[in-house]
Structure formats: C-alpha cells, structure tokens
Image (tube, rainbow, N blue to C red; front, side):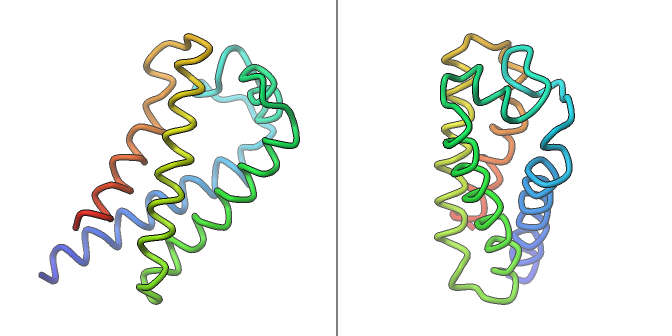
Length: 123
C-alpha cells in the first residue's frame, strides 16, 4: 500500500510542477509542443480559435488545480477534484491539437499528464 501512495505522490508532483512550468515560466516562450506554429500561449489559443479570454480562464484553472494536486499530498480531499478537473482540461488540450490537425506528437505531453491524472484517480 505504501508503494502506491509513493507512486501517486510522484505523479502529483510531476503533473503539478509540469503544468505550473508551462503556464507560469514557459507562457511566453516557444515550445515544440505548441499548437500550429504558435510561439506563445496566447498565439496558441488564437490558433485554436479560442482567443485570449479562454486562454486566461484555462490558465487560471490549470494553475489553481495544479497547485491543488500538489496540495493533495497533504490534503487528500483535494485529490479527486484536482485530478478530474485537470483530466478534463488535458482532454481539451488533446482535442484542440486534433481540431487543428497538429502532428500527433504535439499532443504527447497532454496525453501523458492525462494518463497520470487517470492513474492518480484509479490508484
């Protein structure tokens, strides 16, 4: 049982810190994972046809629930809601890549973190 808890803790840290990195540190930087040929997060949301308001809403939700996922290491009641909300947001990320016909590899980080969120829920 203790090994499962350790795995969940590692997954929470990986997902939480990775999303915080993307939304707080890499926001205005180019990335090979960005949709289309966008160079920044705002440009990426424009490529998806979502605009700046949706970018700010999604960014706020991802940051809040990434922090909640990390906090769920100590406050277990946050675990399910943070995992589910992030899972939905990550599913949306994958769907946006599909919508604009990105190469499948661009969806890799979102798909990986979605699998990690599902593992957190199942374990």
